[in-house]
Image (tube, rainbow, N blue to C red; front, side):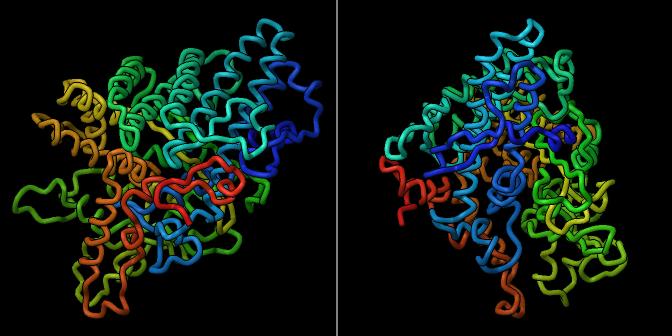
Amino acid sequence: MKKIFYYILVSAMCILPFSCSLDEESRTEIDKTRFMMNAQEAETVLLGVYQSLVSDAMYGYNLSILFNLATDCEQVEGNTTENYRIIPSNAFNSSQAEVQATWAGLYKAIYNANDFIEIIQQRMKIYTETDRQLAYLYIAEARAIRGMCYFELVRRFGNVPLMTSTAMSEQAPSTFVQERPEVVYQFIEKDLVHAAQTLPYATDDTERTNNKFRISKGAALGLLTKVYATWAGYPVKDESKWEEAAKTAKVLVESKKHSLLNDYEQLWINTCNGAWDPTESLIEISFYSPTASGGASDPCGRIGKWNGVKTTVIAGERGSCAGNVKVIHPFVLKWRTKDLVEGEEYNEETVKDKRLNLSVANYQYNPTKTLYAKGKSDTEAKAIENDRKPEMKNKEKQNYTPAKWDIEKYVQNKLINNDKSNVNWYFLRYSDVLLLYAEALNEWKGSPTPEAYAAINEVRRRAYGNNDHDLKGLSPEEFRQAVQDERAYELAFEGHRRMDLVRWGIYYKTVKTTSNAINLWFQDNDPEKNKPYNTAGRYTKLGKHELYPIPQRDMDLCEQFNQNPNWEQ
């Protein structure tokens, strides 16, 4: 599938922005009246819709890494707000270029999906019966991608325009209006319900010649579950959607078409090498570069370069990894000690959760490819040993990075590039849906049900390797907190935490509490020289940073738009 993405006939879906991000006009080098005349040509164009997701503005960088920082688990490197640090610090304004680029990128993908759907609906009238059946599947895929993009828009930007056809893009910008989030969610719901009813499960797919990294029934059901859970939370707070979330997840869970991989580490081996395994992977953004350097036109991303283990260059063999995403130290401390019984001290043997060492790296790679950590050379030092060294500054200890996308450890065919990689991005895993199922049942029923316990304990049993840590006998409030904590550990650094904190209505409180914890931890002998890494708590405002601003360029051109609260310049 990765090769298909690269060798796609891009000119068939070439969209260029004009007066504003929503005013898109199709510019194709191929006459549309003479293209998509059969299912094979239609599939080529559909893959172009998928490829809309891989740019830096989309899941190549912004929607995978940059926009998901500023939480209680991860933060950006450094102690200023300069350059790339401004967004993870929540210190940006409505004119920020990355915000504009992602807004435009999402609407470009939506336009591409709309364009594809409209053309194929006309073309399929002349298709053979076999091609027509494929066309129905392709339309469902395009609608799922469109729903996914609108989900990103509504949960990140709030009141957004709803562009349901390419004809709407012919309007003057002054006529564009924003829809209430409820209306946008209803549109997303229709797209995803259609996809779930039309598409087969990945393991049952016998019609598509290649379904690798493609939307399936399981993907549509899982995404719809996530949509309902977000719809039920802040800021819309339609709590009736908890029931819908639980019922939708139940269909997926009881189908037995997806499950957890036995080995948590296998997830990262797979995604770092583009190995397709639909067992747990529901929606996975695929990146591929046929060159050794990740050229500008290659659909490759920054996964593992920004949010991986810090690595130095070896000329002709590997590029560097910046390690710009830092794991927040109080989060590491909490994870290490969460399973200790009273009176028990931390050591390597007392860490029962296998996910910790596979998710958090306290090591780097030096010029000779040797693992090393601050305070020790040529070996993988234990983090706790560094923490206990009084001679070390706290800033020296704060070098933990995510370990899930350890390129040096996992990737077999590396790009020799300092910025780009061909590591994939999990947008949705089955474990995410299991935890949403448990959460939705608790919220809907008013207490944790046996099915809710079964769902969360299935995730925990893989983490611990046994059922010794199964949850039971919790109050609704305790179960809610358990789910929130479990999502932090299971899905650490995968782009879910910020959006989770927002929908739970605790983003501001959590960020401020985290900032205070970091500042307290950093109090050492010379605080002026050892300032803590930048935390969003310095700049985050209640009732503002739960949403991103409507880009100022679009505010200026679209006269009927209203800016999100507290973002007015």
